[in-house]
Image (cartoon, rainbow, N blue to C red; front, side):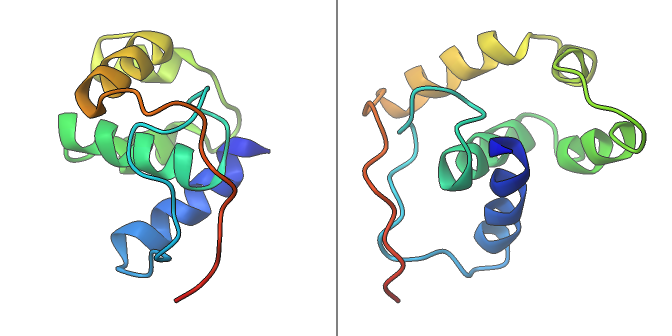
Length: 101
């Protein structure tokens, strides 16, 4: 479920509709925690390969596998999560999400 809500927030993020109270990049304990944590992680992966989210979406037509990350980016999703957290200083758990504009 976290991955699905993360994709929805990723669309908000790239569309310029992010909320002011969203946690900072690097927040969270798991890449698939959901909402903005996952959205920010997907944005990071997209920065590694510009067609990443499009290619990931195409592979998920019938099923999902964490292996898709390695196939597309050359690293496991857990390795990518570690790289992502190092990139942003690992702020830790995401605070409660607020929805103020």
